Amino acid sequence: MKDLQKVTVVLPSLDPDEKLKTVIDGLLEKGFTDIILVNDGSKPENQHWFAEMDQHPEVTLLNHAINRGKGAALKTAFTWFLENRPEAAGVVTVDGDNQHHPEDTRDCSLRMLETGKLVLGVRDFDQPQVPTRSRLGNKITSGVFKIFVGMTISDTQTGLRAIPTKDVKTLIEIYGDRFEYETNMLLAMKDNGLAFEEVKIRTVYIEENKSSHFRAVRDSWRIYKLILKHFFRYTISSIVSAVVDNGLFALLSGLLHSVLTGFPLTAVCSVSARLVSSLLNFFMNHRLVFQSKVSVKKAMLRYYLLAIPQMAAQVLLTQGVYWLLSIPDSATGLRTLLYAVVMTVLYIASYMIQQRWVFAAKTSTK
Image 1: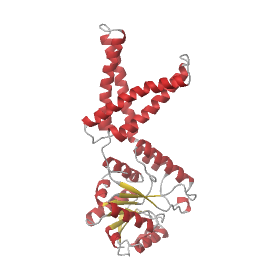
Image 2: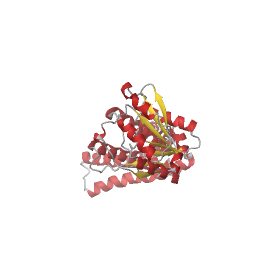
Image 3: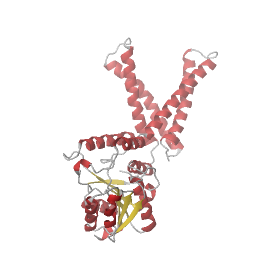
Image 4: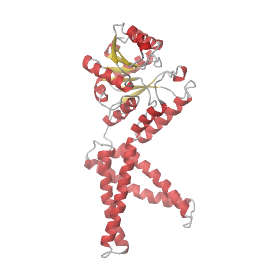
């Protein structure tokens, strides 16, 4: 197919077997004419597969002397692509274990050419052949992505991605050399406002994915650390702001108690402390937590439009729960527990709203 000549296949591989030949033969049969194959430091006994694939005129073989990770292999291919294929429309990344059907690779590539958007080939994890570990892992990660990143992605671990050249230039700069790089690509799509779509693909698992080089504990930690980094920073920002709020309240109370008493003293100290701590919290969230590109003036207006209703919601929800459950004032333990629950819900809700609205630049993402 003529249009596929505009798309370069990027295929990172570590210690392949005969499935690598099947993948490349299938891609050539579907009309792809440019394949970058990256040997990511494979063992000597597996090198013959690369030598055999290098015989195809459509294949460019790049080699890592040692294993550097999938992310490094992708970036090596992206660098070569940008230097040697300036007229190409984009790349499509494919795994070498034959779990991406060549027709799906073609469909994702054509969709990218049609829309100019980055395309994710997503699997259906409700299919019976999906290993339980993979099903649960993806559903959990997709949920975490939705809550803490604000992106709805059906398949966060898909390796089948069609990427326009303009987006390759952005994604090549991001951090990560191993499996976390693919997660970081998704986060960079959010941060840079890269438009994307999903295309349903076949759900293929061969021998329950035993050929995967994914290291469950180490690589999962790398991935979740990236997804939750904003929330960790948000928590630290909140703690610092709370310390400043309480410390300033105590300081002002000590300084002003000789001139003010009762409600006036409490009001002045509370409002002053909250004003300073909220400004500190705003600037930390703007610059350090969400690293927002929204103007300070616009973000600050949104921040306080959120803060005022949130304070009201805190009181109304807490008192509303007490009233609905008819909790007596003497049940201090239960009241404290419910207060903590309400505060936790509002805390997470505030994070989600700040990420999606207060500090979010207008993007064209899905």
